[in-house]
Amino acid sequence: MAAAPSPPAPPAAASSSFEELYRATFERVYAYVASLLGDRSVAEDVTALAYERAYRKRASFRPGRGSPEAWLFGIARNAALDELRRRGRTARLHEDRAQVEGAGPASVEDLAERLAVRAAVASLDPRERDLVALRFAAGLTHGEIAQVLGVSESNAGTRLHRALVKLREACRDS
Amino acid sequence: MIPDSELQADLESIDAALRSGRADAPDSGTRELQGLALALSRDLPEPDPDFARRLDERLAAGFGRTSGAQLRRPRLVRPALAAVAVALVALAVSTSLMGRAPEGGAGGGGGVASKSADRGAAQESGGGSTSSAPAGDPAAGSESLPAPTERSAGGIAPRERVRRVERSASLTLAAPAERLDRLADDVVRVVDRRRGFVLRSSLGVGDEGTTGGYFELRVPARVLATTLRELSALATVRARSQSGEDITRPFATAADRLAAARADRRRLLRRLEEADTDRRALALRRRVLLVSAELRGLQARIRALRERTSYARVSVALESRPADSGAVLRGTGDAFRDGLGTLVLLLNLSLRALGVLLPLALLGGLAWAASALLRRRRREAALS
Image 1 (cartoon, each protein chain N blue to C red):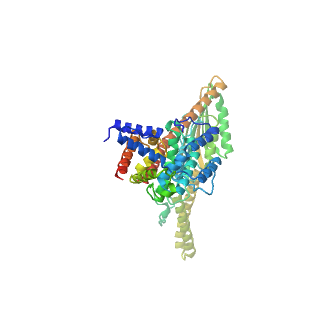
Image 2: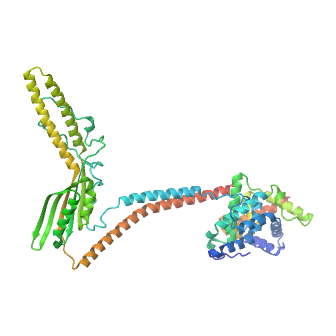
């Protein structure tokens, strides 16, 4: 994945560079949105909406403000939060988990580990779960997470570390 | 509180584990974090292939509308309405500023702004004339006439819908001495064309020809604006003024008194017919004569008032100004003055418009920022 921001493309090439961004981020965007919403069909809708919004606003992207991925995931996050607000739910990671399962575990130990991790993640508050999803589902760097959340990079790192420490403690307890 | 250095070290270890796929930190606590990170990065929801294909198609079509996906448009109604409201206010204010822009750019010189809008006779109430009803009327007679009616009470007769305004204007035109004769002819030609007349005129003559002139004109009030425009176009305008005096009240008072006098005369004539003695008839005849004289006076007064409002007084003074060395330079000088005047006018208008638009833009910007902040907080509240 290209991490460095690219200069603004001329109109003729804008669509192709957007397509490249789409190809590079599609699975991660879906993973992030599904992690946040916990519902496959809704995640599909929101993912499609996020890409449509990004496509229509692609000319407004300014490389000086951050990476294309951070820009795109900001749009996806807003779309997901709008959906949450519309439905009046808080973020849940594990509702109808069967709908948002990842690849099947390789072994029983993996399955146990996975279930433990999921339970630990469920114990986090929604903002921490969002942070974890941005780091590990979306695969963003700390700097990109900071851009998405509108905080400093050190703040993003500190909050992420705090969430991971809580996860670790939750896993130990379980 | 974890020291920043440890925190950074942990985060870097996690990054390393994600890159290598192994949790191999020497510290057990950090190793646990690495293992956790690896587990989180592996247990991810995957998109349905059918959904991926459909989204690919939509991207290829440039995200045209399809019946499958639920399209939720961003809420732009409120910012759009706010922007439209700001634009309308700015347009209204700018239009009113343009309407009140002072004259004088094209005419050069020190034009004096008019005191009242010039729209012909009997249109609007200007400065109120407070002349009272004529005192010592010769035809008062032995019986007192009815008091003025309610509609003409008060200084300005506010209930009169049709206003009687006496208009006047004065203009000072400047031209080289050798052109003053022709200018005087042009003034008369304009007045004739507008069906007015010259009440008084004079031309001063010196060693070098005509030195100046003066005209007292009367033009129909309804064409005053046009006449002034045409006169102003004849030469350089050095000064210009207009005024209006509302004489509705004296007009209404005189009309009321006229109606009362007529009624009185009719009543006296009826009584005269019924007079049964010569002595009584003689007394009534005397009173009829007095009332008739009053009627004539009032009619004359009303006629005079009508003339004051039907015709506007225009005084035109002609001055000589030094001729420039050549017609080209004179034209250039006038053009320069006109251009400068126009630039100053445009600058004034721009500054006024800016004075309105800048605060509006600032308010609009603040409103937009507040709206964006509110929208962000509402979104974040979904995670509360």
